[in-house]
Amino acid sequence: MPEFRSRKALVNPELRRRGIYILPNLLTTAALFAGFYAIVQAMTDRFEQAAVAIFIAMIMDGLDGRVARLTRTQSAFGAEYDSLSDMVSFGVAPALVMFEWAMKGMGKWGWIAAFIYCVGAALRLARFNTNIEVVDKRFFQGLPSPAAAALVAGFVWVMIDLNYKGEELRWQAWALTLFAGVTMVSNFRYYSGKDINLRRSVPFIAVLAIVLFFVLVSSYPPGVLFALFLCYAFSGYVMAAWGWIRRRNSPA
Image (cartoon, rainbow, N blue to C red; front, top):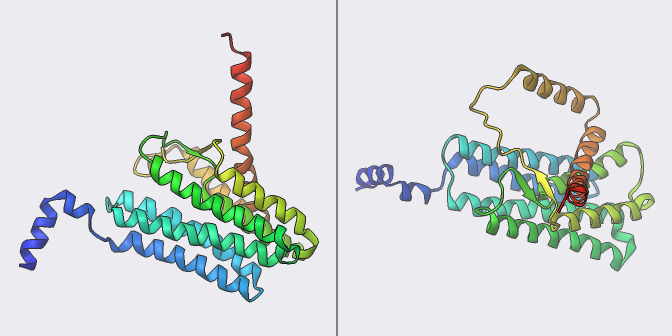
């Protein structure tokens, strides 16, 4: 009977899509653990470790989808599990880290900003799951939750590295948290990179650019990562403004 079931699963692709695959879900679990670890570290006032853990969760989250596509192990279970993991790692964890680091002494203003970020991440993930078949896969609708989390974590990381305390930057942190939360539910388009095929050959200049990227990040990780994701967050606004200018100047 087990042999019969295994052969049937191999023959029927529908049964295969319902399965639970180890490798991509292990990466999703690693991302979930990193998000949970960030929460624990924030509760014990280890904010630099919490920020680094959010970046690690972002890397694991990027790998699980790529690995699932490359190994053809996508499944409905994996998609749902990934969304739940993203909500913890990129919704709850960044909001809690920023609140504990800078906004805890602001009273209701602090937790309102943290909640707006958290609900923005939840709405962003829900909209992504429901629109995944109808939107242009080359672009995200609204700032992706991993990028928003990297923006918040990068701010905490770089300011700690510059010896700033959270109380000194509470309003800057408040504004950045609101900006990230609102931008996640905006209609601005952000380049997704999903049209890049890793199984095809790439020009030498692309390999050189990747090497230069890693060299740049390794030179000063907190500052470079925060600057990159800040530019990415504003890129949606720039694209929207450029599109509006072109439509205004074009003939009717």
